[in-house]
Length: 86
Image 1 (cartoon, helix red, strand yellow):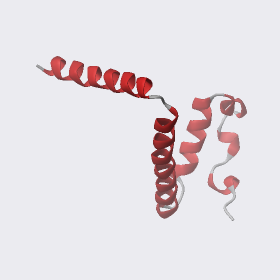
Image 2 (spheres, rainbow, N blue to C red):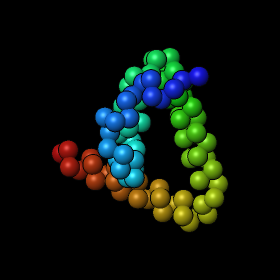
Image 3 (cartoon, helix red, strand yellow):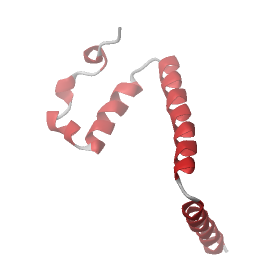
């Protein structure tokens, strides 16, 4: 079993850092950098699978009008990006 104290020494970080999402993310990133690349790859794949499932679940919950509005907003953003380039 992997012990977090063997990867990162906790005194390096402010104990209050984990009270904010950004602080927690910084600590998680520091720990992840020291993980075996194979473990990191497996964790990335798990996160990707969850994201794929989450998008489909969100789409099922939305009614057609909400989906249409989201699609319109995305199209406007794409077109705005194209007009800025020219």
